[in-house]
Length: 487
Image (spheres, rainbow, N blue to C red):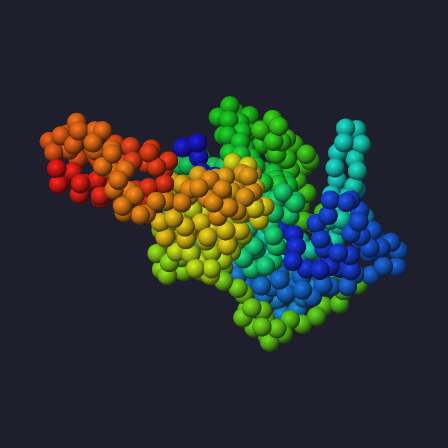
């Protein structure tokens, strides 16, 4: 791979989930496990039905366009993209092409990849309707029309990525934007995100600015996870390089659409690549163009909420959180919201960050959960942190309590109470046990006086053993040293 350059372009499809109805019909825009429950006659393309534009879907699309530093249109148009799929009842899709302009064109977005700030170039962002979902069961196919007509944002980048890491980092940044801006849940488990990837390679020694030196562009269609995007890109790069070095490039690397097969870990040919001219675009006659006023655009711009990068700066500059921890906290909006709620309830920002990024997120990753799925509320975490701060329990005990609270779904304070875990902070009680331990360990006292000061750890351990872990460790340590110095 060191002898080749890679050029990658992305088409990211994200459903706008934060609207009450679909983009051109009054059917509910709501994820449902019950197939074909969110449909109206217009979704099924019944004769005589007409589309009506969802203003909120347009507003959220324009907001995304602004965040991506795109140019917004003066007039809003929709067009027909003519092609037939079994999950597209009309036989065409209502969408937007680049002429007239869609909701956004020619933008750019900074994103971070492996510690470096990169810039992605945006060709266009357009609003369209999603198709229904097909599920293949053996030799049969069933269709769920709940997805038909759901508002869909398609983001088309320039071929500005040079590795799978860059592509995935950009996609993660976009998911974050959609979540923080309240445009979409952007949940791949609900099928709300899908990606098309375009890949071509060239010899490293050739002029990369000459388009003739780049190889054939291959499209990988509808990859439905970021892990899949990474694996598909890496596999396709290797496939194209192997074909080049084996002398079979022209036979094996064609202008075609392929799909990513997770079971085999390979890309598989679907069909030859269709050019835009084959879709026979024309302006949708049932949706008149309408003007996007400057006043409305300004109103939308002012409504853009605090995004992940702004929260990250706040966590670092105001809360004193490390860049690494702040990056982890803002990656998922739900996690950042959980963290901010703990701070509003009075938790120390650093302590809260430590517990969330270590124990809680570790639990989520282990069991493939969302932070919204867990029993432990921000209020419960704050109660646990307060127990540590006032020396009721030790940090070690708190970790055990937190694990049990997450797995057994019990409130931390109740666990502490049930197990009698409150620390002993009474000086006389601790001193009595220290004297017992030192009387039992005269050799340890001699070792300490001969310079082996780390023997104190052993003595603290003996006190903790006698108190079943309830003695205050810091107090115990200082009292042991003080008592030894007297002898």
